[in-house]
Length: 237
Ligand SMILES: [Zn+2]
Image 1 (cartoon, helix red, strand yellow):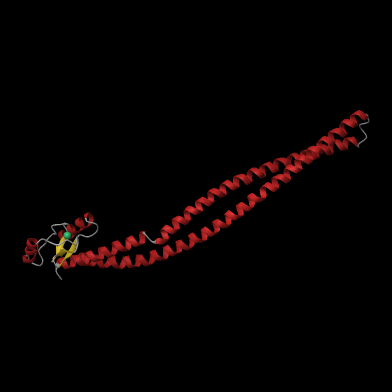
Image 2 (image 1 turned 90 degrees about the vertical axis):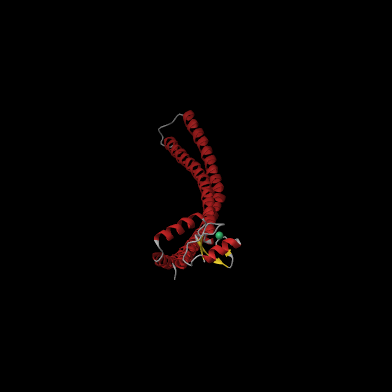
């Protein structure tokens, strides 16, 4: 096999490697996964908002309960003194009874507020449970997609390894300067540095070669380095 034909073998492997790398980078599951990840982020934001609302309710409820405990303690203290027999002035006893009355009214109002807070928390808890369920669903989707991607990567990497080894073997048989020219053109021309002359067309740019050009190429020896006039690629003839 001539150097130019071997170079075409290198080109075939490079093209195959490019396609595999493109396939690896653009697996449809990657787009699906980023979609799911976006949805997870959205649910997380809503969960943070729900969590903040729930915390505010719990904090308010806690404050009321704390105050109820204080009011109860205060009532207990007063009643203990009232019934201890140490206070005998009826005006004072009346004042104490009035204070207990006022404290009990305060306690009742606080208990209503605790109940209201608990009622307010219910739909927020439901919302949080629904969002948590939604996130679990998305998490499961993401996990499945990651597994599919990982499996596809392993399969593509195995193909890449085979192609790269074959490419290295073919490239080793191509003279250094020819390979360097090819690589420079390939980098500049969308991955194709060498193409075969197919009929009267360049296999790289698919344009017909002018008759005079074609004639010149046909007269050149098979191993002469010829470039396509239109695209500049190495033309294997
Ligand atoms: Zn061309």
